[in-house]
Image (tube, rainbow, N blue to C red; front, side):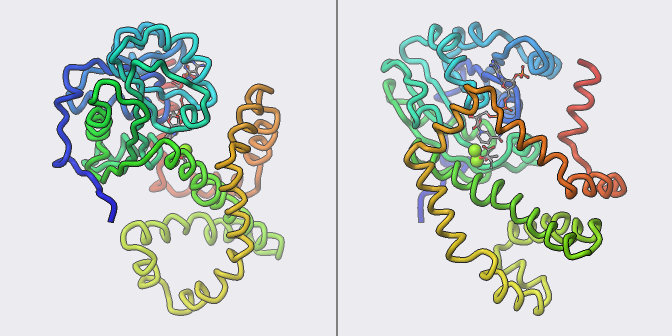
Amino acid sequence: MAKVYYDKDIQEAVLKGKKIAVIGYGSQGHAHAQNLRDNGFDVVVGVRPGRSFERAAQDGFSVKSVKEAAKEADVIMMLLPDEQQTKVYKEEVEVGLEAGNALAFAHGFNIHFTQIIPPENVDVFMVAPKGPGHLVRRTFEEGAGVPALVAVHQDVTGDAKDLAFAYSKGIGSARAGVLETTFKEETETDLFGEQAVLCGGLTSLIKAGFETLTEAGYQPELAYFEVCHEMKLIVDLIYEGGLKNMRYSISDTAQWGDFVSGPRVVNEETKQRMKEVLKDIQNGTFAKGWLLENQANRPMFNAINAREQNHPLEKVGEELRELMPFVKNPIKQKEVVVNAKG
Ligand SMILES: NC(=O)C1=CN([C@@H]2O[C@H](COP(=O)(O)OP(=O)(O)OC[C@H]3O[C@@H](n4cnc5c(N)ncnc54)[C@H](OP(=O)(O)O)[C@@H]3O)[C@@H](O)[C@H]2O)C=CC1
Ligand SMILES: CC[C@](O)(C(C)=O)C(=O)O
Ligand SMILES: [Mg+2]
Ligand SMILES: [Mg+2]
């Protein structure tokens, strides 16, 4: 079994007393900044003027421009959207880097695909939480954490690996488990996971199930409960005790259907497609497409996003969730409050 590191295995002294600039205050940014601060680390937030700036100030942080924060910090964690990082790095971060500083990432995209090439005199490490930023914060507040991967790309001080582990402990990830990896392995597996299984695979599966039922004349509300709402309840059982725990709880009829019909839907052909997706990630085709899409101001991203938001599943889901007061969306609620103040 791979070595998994926990709080007890990690010394945080190497990071204590250093100034950490969290660049960006979005999904990951707000969680890293707040968890690190709660664990006694010295954090400055670097963002452009606007919504995030106001939110970080409202949360009590010292907030500066990206340039100022990066210049005054010893450790600079890049938590801007991947596609924005190169420009901001070149214009505002690189100039403030001093020998012996550390440049850090939560995903390997820009280092692995050579969009950012840091100077040779700084450490470069990664702490990549294996979960959405809002849950990095929420689980931390609940006394738990989200697992993370750490990697070192450059080690000039001899401390890069210790810094990465200390940072992972600082954001609460070592409560759940931290694994060592490389930028290449994290980048390729993270992109594959989100495209083929966690986000792309799952949304396509849910939509296909919903459409199959509604096109056959079944009620959309019923279809939503069947293939979307219940998904969380089933996944919770898998999360808590593996596939066998879920299969223990469902009926034997469902388990037999799982065995005989599941592989008719997700089969060798699906796996072949997954291999193609992985190949496009490994050979840079996906990265190139995403970077070009952004250079063109996202024409396809925006068109698909608009279409997806109008999918009948989204409409009926919105109506049904309104009628389930126990289905709360703490992320949305927080944003509404902030927007109202902003
Ligand atoms: N989202 C996640 O859960 C995960 C993300 N990651 C990685 O973490 C990194 C950050 O991702 P994520 O948290 O999703 O990012 P977000 O999209 O949530 O980041 C938004 C933040 O970046 C700021 N920002 C955007 N563009 C600029 C710009 N041009 N100049 C200055 N500030 C800018 C925004 O400010 P404003 O409000 O002013 O727009 C906001 O503070 C990425 O590398 C990602 O791959 C890794 C694991 C999971
Ligand atoms: C699954 C999507 C993710 O990789 C994540 C939350 O881990 C991301 O890039 O947001
Ligand atoms: Mg991920
Ligand atoms: Mg990702």
